[in-house]
Length: 226
Image (cartoon, rainbow, N blue to C red; front, side, top):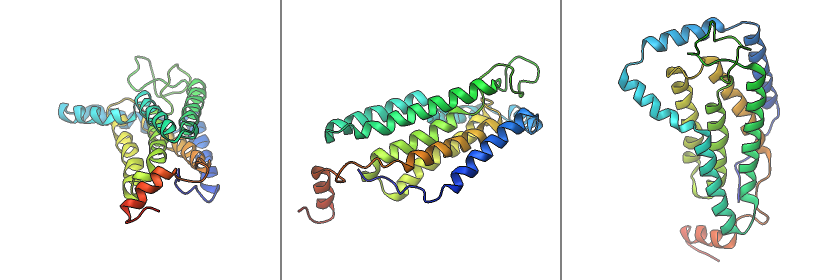
């Protein structure tokens, strides 16, 4: 199975990771909390029912359980077709990396959700699992896995749409609906990109490339099958 071209440089990975750590420490020290509160107050005052429903539908794009299930079913189907366990490995790696990273960071920061019924819910350490946004992490990692599994059948343009549109939509809906602080969403994007870049560096390709049946199918579409 051909996989998307891996990132060439580690510098963006290091910069993203450093940015995530810096943002986390800054929030722990109390920076940007005013921005979070101001954004929440604005969206709470500008959420008419039609937009609320529309944003709610868009927010389903980041359901981790659904994305995991879809990717698992697809991977198992490909594994049976190719008679190889290799298509399942990216799903296992994605689940392990998202679960471990989100669990550790959420347990350490313990940030309440924006509408938690406590004083100053924007602060860390008060009990909660808001930071970082799991919806954003899941959308970046899991849609990347879906593209990886479906890459023989997707054009480059479609791959970009699948990888980019869900995180963009969720970066708006999670904040607009008041489900996450804006810095939760920023942190989720950054952490998701770190994990996605790591996933893209792993050589998932099946030995020998595409299996003969798929190679023949593609060859027929291009005018021949040898």
